[in-house]
Image 1 (cartoon, rainbow, N blue to C red):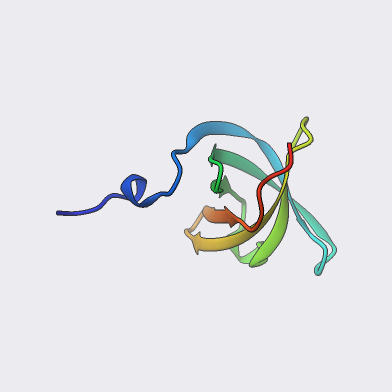
Image 2: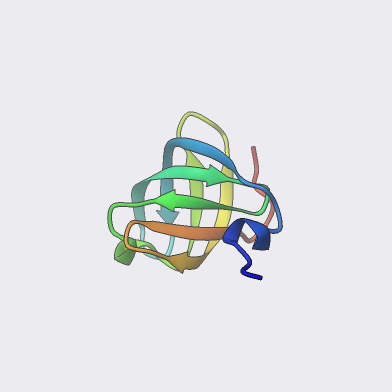
Length: 90
C-alpha cells in the first residue's frame, strides 16, 4: 500500500492562498511568499527562489497578526514545506 503525503500529515491542511512574509533575524532579510496551505502544525509556502529561504525563520501572514517560528522540512523547485517550532500566534 502506498501512503500519500496527506495520509502522513499529523494535521489536516486547508488551502489558504494568501500573501505572507518570511523573516530571518540571522540574515536580516524579509522575503515575500504565498501561504498555499496551512494547518495547526505547518504550512506549504510558494516562493520565488527556494535557495534564498533559510532553514529556520518567522512566518507572517499579510493583514493578520499570525506569527510562527518555522523549520523547513522539504524543498521543491518553487515551494517549501515547514513545521511550526511552537504553536502559531494569531
